Image (cartoon, one colour):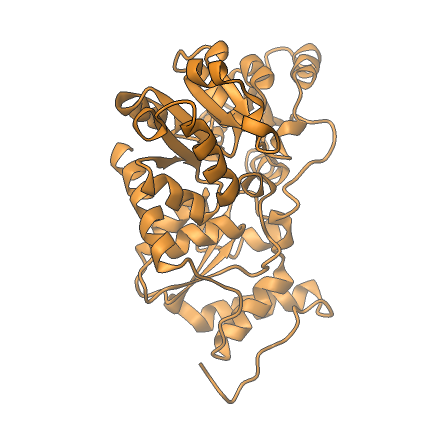
Length: 365
């Protein structure tokens, strides 16, 4: 840390876009291999283009961990993503979130006290440690990953949820799945679990709003959480596109509702959606149900294909959108001055437990 150069106190809102871009390029070039910038698929384009690596959250964290020369990891994403980067990177590396307000409303729908309370309540009905595997979506806070690590559970992503559920059912007869009920439900249905074998745990209600018999009979207990972006897509949107554009293919993210996923032609993670569209022939027609920035990027990349955003209204990840060029420039220029701003640090105890859960997942992949 430098004592000569003061911390730049405010992001640079009075600087033109052109100057910001020039200053980011200069800072990035000067920092060189000592800093790696990660850009999630849902980032705005003006930030995304500066990323050294782009992709989904787990992929980015794993790539950063393979860059030991990068002492700082600037994650252009949201808080839980930077936490995963801190957990998977070496102790010498520091994960940074350019704007601490970049969170995830879905991740906030399940917190450790609520999950621990649910675990205890379920434990009064059945032998929870012997019968239930906790699985948290990677879109969750580090302490929930740690909870899963401590209770024989694991983590999943949108691309491997079915495989992780299969792994869990080989070990115990039930699953507690959080925080996104839709990913859990859609993944389970596609592996043959009936809708009548799943119940929703509502943390704001006594006993999750469930009877003892419902808990005993359930194969999967789904947390009452959701993504505010993906819940915007409706079955009627699919009907309208099929009526207006014959032959159009519908691809959606599994964070969408069961009714939407059931009507879609293709269901997949951000990486899988992109792969499906990129591998389709010229002239293909697509309506895509995921975050707007990703859809617009695909439209720009493949003008030879007809690509539409599935929702008729604009909906984007507002918290992801908080990462802007002003915050990125401010972060990089502080690094040049020897200052770390907005470091994301997971405690050693939580990181150890969370890493166990992540390693269980990686062993299945």
